[in-house]
Image (cartoon, rainbow, N blue to C red; front, side, top):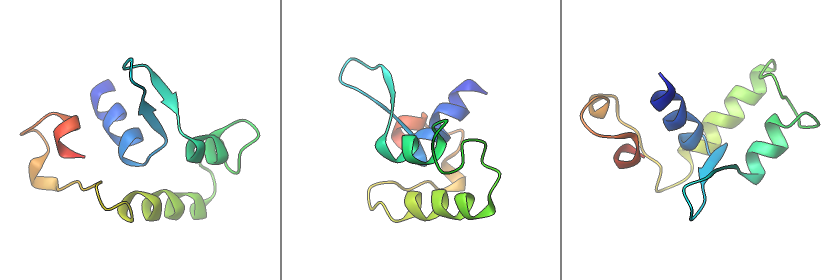
Length: 77
C-alpha cells in the first residue's frame, strides 16, 4: 500500500526523491497541496483534472495498467 502511494505521488509529480533518496515536495505539490495551497484536501474536482493533466503531459512519465505488478514503481514511471 505504501509503495503504491509512493508511486502515485511521484507519477503526479507531487513528491520526488532528492539525491540522498529523501522524499521532498515538488514546487507543483506545494502550490496545490500545501496548507496555503490551492486545494490541500483535494476537494475541488478541477484539482483532480489538473493532477491528471500535469502527469500525462510530462513526456517521460508513462504508466500502463499491464505493467502493474510486473516491475517496481521506479521502472514504471
